Image (cartoon, rainbow, N blue to C red; front, top):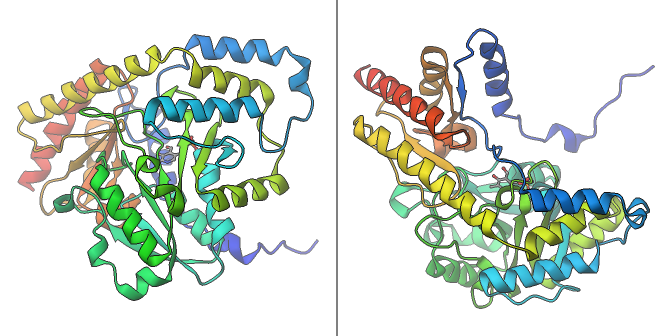
Length: 393
Ligand SMILES: Cc1ncc(COP(=O)(O)O)c(C=O)c1O
């Protein structure tokens, strides 16, 4: 049999930077049972029981055993719209401004297939969530990176984008609360984004995966900005808000022609999500939100104790404003990867090297606060010990 030649687009996919870390951690875990893995972004808490119960009940309903509606069930689209109205003050049309997704990740990759032709240009944050790049690469488009710098509060500086690049950019990805920097966006920044997008005719995709997890203030939806629905969409997911990462439920909202294009793509690729999952998702969005408040309080407590411990040990930290990450600067003159390796092998704490999220992530590591407070406290002490050793050289 002849060897299969993969389509060119598959060869364009970026290398999975974190696969190496996952392999190293799995290998070390065999001999180091005290290893604390803070390298990933997988919520550690279970889905609230009333949502699981709704799934179990709906799974027994034969209606959900047949093919469902393309584009998902109308009750879920309505639940999504009432959630957005209630939580973010954004009104949406359930028929025309909602696309149900198999998790945010699917939509973030699909949107590039909907909008970009080969050779087109997309603006991507650096550091940033790697899947934006995967979608752009599959579409055969080019990327221009928008540096997220500490001196700009980890927001892109539109004034530094070349006029020609802005004119060519068909698509732009943003994400606040931000993975990996834990920064949040302000209403002013989103207004500036709308102005930039109108001027350059760029479609904005705001990834609002951590929309429920803000510490000083509730995170703002991009769609709450005047004119946002004319220029872009927001992608939301139930993965973090309700600890439903394994369930694969998300949605895209906003600009009608982009939503229609995503729905059209999905008409050809899938029939929508399992009906019982759609039922449970509607329950999550419309019933008591007490579990969400408890979850945010839990992450706040973890963040406060973790950062306080590092500070008490003399490690300079950045305050996380949202998400469940800490973005920690490593000592001057030490690379992200060597810090990560030393921390893993000498102190048995796994964190993600910042350069895995892009060139401007160099000099940082990302720490996921996704284990209990006692282990996080132990990890903070080990990180501090390692930090001072690395700083001494
Ligand atoms: C910034 C960001 N966007 C999107 C996602 C994808 O979430 P999901 O596909 O589970 O909805 C994640 C998950 O880690 C994320 O961190």
